[in-house]
Image 1: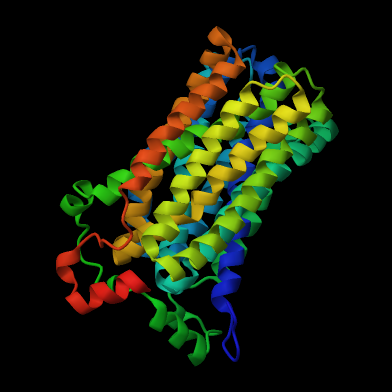
Image 2: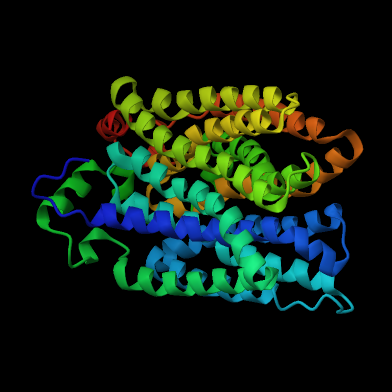
Length: 438
């Protein structure tokens, strides 16, 4: 992204979205670390804790499409600010559910459900901003940075939350996360704007660079949401199903990897925290590398190979690592191989969000929200199904099930074509040529 005399506001906003993304995953994965102590206080087993994990993902999944509509209707600046305040509140409320309450488990379920609703707007809002601010040729790297925050936030969670728990108890970890979210809400509102034309620090050179790099579909009037076209689109359903597979795999790491190390590999609290960082470090590196590869391959061989082709390879690599890692006896070697599976699947992350911006233009928030719903449904399934598989058949079977689900993602990605706009009838033939070669 060489700048010359251009201002760099869009890069600053992408970095801020990286930070928000990290905070979001710090807030949603802290319960995986705190869950070891919470189970003791609430007197629940892994399966019931899995229900609490799933509650977040149910709320997150169900609100994805409304979240995308809100981001398109009211703009990512206001919507994401409100969301940061909302999830800070419900993060704190997680710690305030009394263990001796008559329906403590139900209250925990409802609080985490509400937290999921609040966090649901993060990535639809971010992708709506991408569609307005980021030229097509930079979207791979931009999304790579935003979703590198997933690995960064999840990676710092084990040592940070463990340190807070050892110092002040598991409840303190939720209060700290709530405070971080509230600070971020203020910063986002002060810095962000919905469009580059509204931002006082964007100079003419940067504005021209952004406008010249946007696909033609981005400049279409927003109009009503094209539900019919969206729900009959092979692209949209391919993204939905492949993101379901993606969500199933990654939430094994977000929800259960720390507990897997502690209870299946018999590591102590500090060792589990240190080892469980590795998959998230690999996710971060995979995300950044995938974004760069995405843009380079797209420029040389076209959007299909840069977005879809890369993702097919990433899914195949991930499934292979999960199969191998699940059969290794040595704890450290298993962690390294399984972490490779997490990093490999994250090579595809920027492709998901780049394609929705490529094909949907002004409807990017809604389409990406629908796609992301698939990811969260996959996560909700694995949050409850993985402990059951582990209990009945062992942890090796749980990871092998994830490797099997990866095949769905391979098939689904193969049919996704970023060159096919959601509403091709709105584009002139010349526009389609530009969109295909951007």
